[in-house]
Length: 225
Length: 94
Image (cartoon, rainbow over all chains, first blue to last red):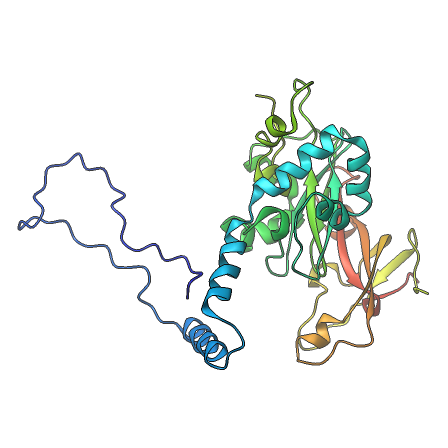
């Protein structure tokens, strides 16, 4: 399929050892990553080919949809966070209705799901998980990182969130409540991190560059440079 | 009209019916408080089987104290879990 994780053959080792290309000591080839036609991959190809043959979709429409999915990423959420930090009226609208405020900021929602924005404060830190599967605010963050989908994160984020946070380098005093959000149905969640103290007068673009994906999932905070 | 209002105490049903469920096992039987009403959505537990998901179900966000979910929870008493639950999974606290 056009949207897979196969990257072909990589020379990702250091080339500081002597070896002769084409010689007897040629290093072994790594197997290609795209040679397994699993059941689901086969099904996807079959359905895609049928949709094209029957005229429901064109190949260019499929390619375009994949390109749009791949173009979404944490830069979208970071821009929203930076705008909320600099524009109190926008922040109020964002916390009241995340979907509407993000669409106002130019982000397209092509799912029926809605976005809830949860604000970190000196009293409360928010952490997002989907224990049932891997629901993720793709409209503002793109595709989820692999650890977000792992059984370990999904089970531990609700059972021992402070240990998980510590492993991400986030130490919170007991005076800060940890609020876990389990994304089980039609809502998606974006954490609005706290703005670092030493950033007065910064532009939205400068601020957005500080905002990491992980801070918007809630496993870390935004640090001053 | 929704059955519950923001701030209402609710209990999660203990049911364990077969099929596609959107209420995680760890929260069944636990008591929490409605944090907000999210609106009405087609029931995903019906949509999963190709049915139309009607009538729509009210979706709530319910807040639970961590220590009410895990008695041996290691963090402070103020830590919480908010979770989305459909109305048919909720009942008034006894």
